[in-house]
Image 1 (tube, helix red, strand yellow):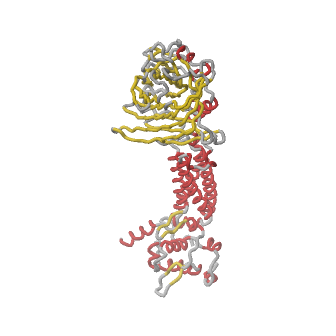
Image 2 (cartoon, helix red, strand yellow):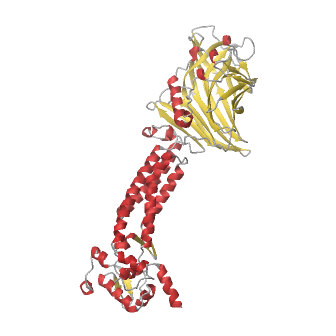
Length: 440
Length: 168
């Protein structure tokens, strides 16, 4: 009997330790963990929480993936940013949202900054034509990386979730259309900040891009200058849904893979599923240009773009990290993978590639806040692959098995115990019916 | 085994297991639940609904022979030795409260299952499979708790009935 008691107490203690440990593990910042504990998989993302932050490690701790996760009102937002504590950090970020639309369709919409292009706006239409793109900025790495964990604040009874990351001192190359490096440039910083909130079944993801000034340029060509050049950020979107969807630009269906090369200027893009607007890209707001001590405000422009307008040399050199990111997304949303649509972050296969343009730039610091809007169905909680900590499952099974063995052992023991002094029960249990002296 | 042979020596627990039974066990049980206070023959007779005090006295003497209770100078009896044999070993005595030991296991397992269920917000098949051994263990423990409880040698209901009868 004592043995069973010990087993039960042990099981209880194990449980008391394991449950909080599994919870705490997901909340710990990477800095507070030892390197032994740093080996993590996607299951370590605390997807049960309203929001969580953390870091996943890959490639023998060389590469880290910072994540911010929000799970509220039946919709989930995931943000990823690569960084490294060993080498200079690569600059790859991704933000995606998983939700159920008003018509009950599950959808995942992802967005990633693919390329920075420098163009000469010769025709003054503010968006880059194919022949106007002079260089693209091949981002190499950054010296520093800082992440601001999610902060939840309430403004006017609306919960706002804010987070961000910042890459500091970025070096890269200006690559021309032939694929040759024309200059090595240093960008002061690149910061990505986000403000996510939901109002009346509509979620808003306000993004903030802060691209620092180009502080250094080394070129073998003396004539190379940033003067008069405009900046364009090329984004690729990823839409995964079991139903057919349509991208609408200026109210007309658009597909980057088949579109005409000339850019289609717009201030709004839409994703429609079953003729219902489910996601919206809102552009066209003003951006801030920090021209030394002068702060200027200019109108930003956007254009839906054909995939073929993107330089063939612009294939991301860090494709292995993109593949890793795709794999992480597949693990995080296995149900999404079951839709038989590959998670593909390559702009070349995206149906909606767009450029956000800053016609007045010349290498100065730019700040801009485009917004992404999702029309959600708060009743339709998506079948998200909640990351059940595998160690917790194993612990539950082991403890359950120990308890079951103890229970069976105890059952046999009790049966033997009760079988022997049969007279006891007969005398007492049915005391009213049997003579009190019949038992002795 | 005669009482004479038992009078001066303590029985081993194995022997007690075979000897301690029937109403003698019920009397001993009653003493275990009231370990702090000395108990008289009349009280035993009323509590266990014996027809006469001599019956109660017979069992008390038997228990003295087993070395389990003692008689004080006032003629009252008190527990001398606590033995956990037979059905008694399946119970825990906390003051006047008696409950099956299995109740502890049942509660521990139930709490464990509940905590695990709360930890896993998504109630998928894999969660059910993982928790299945624990759920089975919990069911067995609760079954044992109820079975043992039903076999309790002396129950409060007897004394309640006897109280009612004495009032009449």
